[in-house]
Length: 212
Image (cartoon, rainbow, N blue to C red; front, side, top):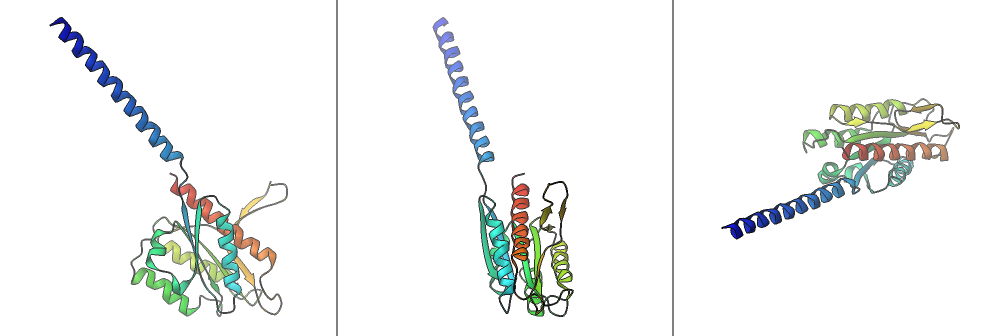
């Protein structure tokens, strides 16, 4: 009986040691999973007739790609699929300014994302950009209108960040835009910089929210 008792105690000790080792390895795996970078998906969708808004969209995509482990999809808004929207952690929308407003064709498309496709945008990160011919032709109104669409669909919105040379003054803006009319044709280097800042901000914020 004594030898049996010693054997039972030894067996129990061995089982305890094994279970402790398994638990420790499981904990290491969990910790490893938490520390492993998770891919952030950014969708840049735009409506462009003359190429200016498309150029700005490419700037947004470039800025997002500067954030490590970020997968960027850039598409014309009419080509965006339900799967694109559902898989995106962040969405940037951009368009030209038509009479101080969103072009009708784009408005129909994005409304259908909700009305027909029933996409759940809750807690996805959103940002907006626009182009327009005039200095005060309504570009900011278009940006705000796109952000309001996002807010109404339960998204978290953000804009590009800036700071002065000393890093003392830091501020944000509602979005990125470019004046493309006769007074300032095309998309300038500074306007592209704003687009890159927007893309970088969206990807960075999406990563922070996804890592929680």
